[in-house]
Image 1: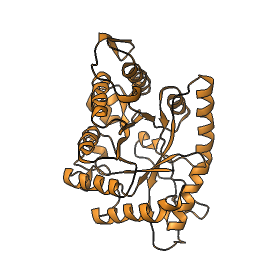
Image 2: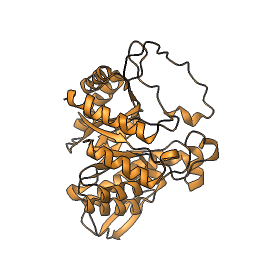
Image 3: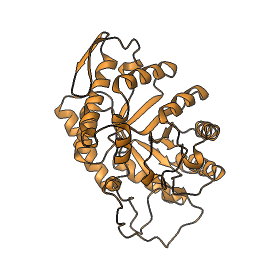
Length: 324
């Protein structure tokens, strides 16, 4: 099992100096990667749970690449339709030249309607745009210049990107839990990076992705990843877990996030004692997960930077050594 960690980059953590401190802490502790959330602008109706200031994730990746030596940098997840596909291809290829193999792009279709409105992007086309962007990025990174591509959302003829990533492209790990996302990952991606499905769902989805790849004759390297819910290393077991009642969603778009997977006693996975967390890692490893992106902070948490660093260190030193 490989471990990355989401480094908060908004709210009380939307501070460049603090961000670099946490990234360097993650590298020192041996985490494979540091990941950042993606929002360009946040509509007023959502800012209460996604507070400002918010740092742009690709900028975070590039600055962090220059401030570290080993750690991978990624976006959890980059909303593909938010950015010009041709410009993103150039930016990612350029970044790869400064740290070959260190940039990973988690890719998603997005969900926040007000953000799409602010950027002037039709909400209804976000899935089709993401599919075409992924196809274009694979093509432009692996094809000698000049490159031509004719699509609905990307249309270029005889252009020179003038820089190509190492190994044919920056890894594209596709997020999403629904069947269309599984197909998108299998056919167009280099990995699957969903939001915390249950072990049973993960196992069946992995089998489906594998079948799709085999049926399409796709044999390029692929990573089965897992974006974790918010977690904590606890000093002692708790016995008062309660499964929360379903919450009435203020807006339909908020239904994108699945329920947190739980142990039989109601304990949310990835929150527990060292022994319980080892059990969680082993459970998802058995389900086919190869890479975990951990979260020890969310916008709803009130964990100080010092407390967050303690969590990062405890997981790295007390849990990881017992996980194969």
